[in-house]
Length: 215
Image (cartoon, rainbow, N blue to C red):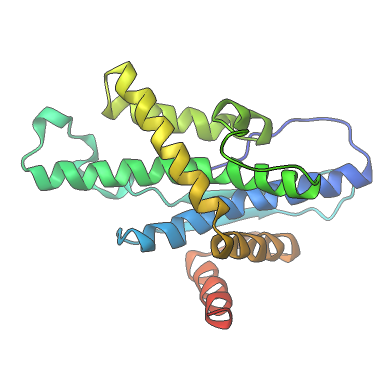
């Protein structure tokens, strides 16, 4: 899960803001993978965050969430719907791809909310839609979400309805106060981190410590 980068000439101030955009984007992915999957009683998945923070004022830092996809952890992921052995396998796969799509969308939505709050603008589901996420580094995330749904839902109309439903669920997750506080905390953690890789275990420790102190 990687924010789509746009190479532009920026002032030091705008570079600082781009860094924050990236951090909130990736934090949105992480919190959705870690917290939402748990809330939905889905199996844990491995992920790590790769960071390249050069410390140079002329270039924004780079961060990417690697792994974290439920579908990839299911052996039945390569079985087409009509090949399923049981209804349970079909249901498990449905839960997995829906969660993965929501986790894809959570990144650009978190960035969009950060930008809206920073600019003192309204952030609500009536003003935000899937197409708008392209403005928040979401091109790659939307492409991946669409590929998932195209594979699992052949019918175009059904696919559009499913995407709309999953987008609404992703929005509700990001807009939840407690989830947003976790995203803010982890985004700041990413910005201050000097490591090249943050392991799943380390991210878990950071989040559990924060959640434990805020319960």
